[in-house]
Length: 129
Image (cartoon, rainbow, N blue to C red; front, side, top):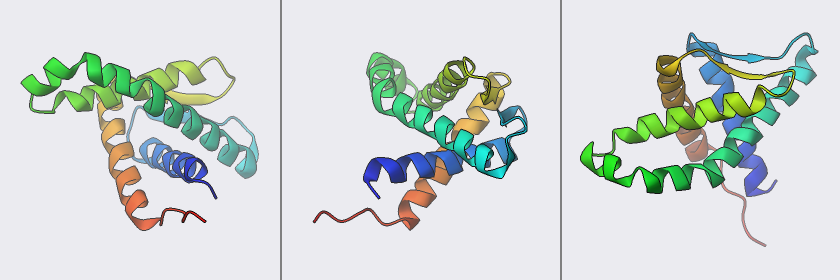
């Protein structure tokens, strides 16, 4: 597996954990069955991974004064905004992430960050050949 594939799977598992544990966050899988639900979580994980890879650095750079002023606490807001952006992007599909308010986005961002961090520690990175 490549690093990008592992990152998408870890992000999908973190989104599943947030949807399971945080009220106000859900993933609309419809009646697709287990395989369809896994595929939808992987799509949402891929969208969130892309948002975190390309949009988040720009938002972080633009909010650098607020990050310094709040001693990094504003980073929770940045993570919540990325989760909200992912929900907005996946809302164009017939399925996707649903975030019900800013408080749910902040709690969901915390859960996604913690689960992603723990899984990144547990899952070994692929070795270069």
